[in-house]
Length: 149
Image 1 (cartoon, helix red, strand yellow):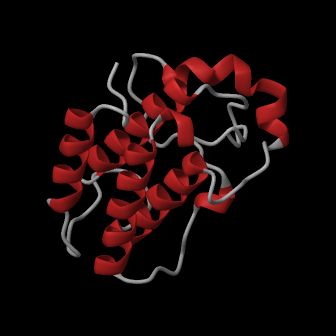
Image 2 (cartoon, rainbow, N blue to C red):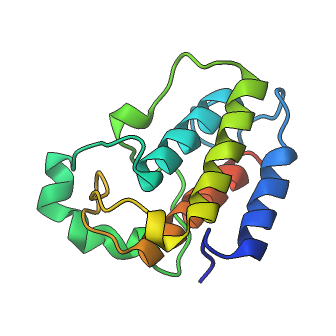
């Protein structure tokens, strides 16, 4: 399984992010490219531990039963639900959002498993660093595919 702790996987993701432009359109879903970049950045900040989002009640009730959807082999399904705290209406603009995401990806990768958050995921709950690495790859892959890159 691919993980953001693998150098070749990070390079793949960084190259895909760099293929985006301010005019890139989504192929499904509601977010525009700036909103998607901001959404992915905050998810990365959560994995790094620089932002903390407590586990949602629904996650506490059923998150562990769905954890395999986040860290298993299958891709994340289109139009999957998201934490409302990860939804952005206003953004900083394309270039700033893109650079922020690139920075967050690099911080996560360079920090390695030792610097990964010990906070629970806001839906799935407790994750190991290895699971965080897989989930972050799958999340980015999902949204970059959403925008055709």
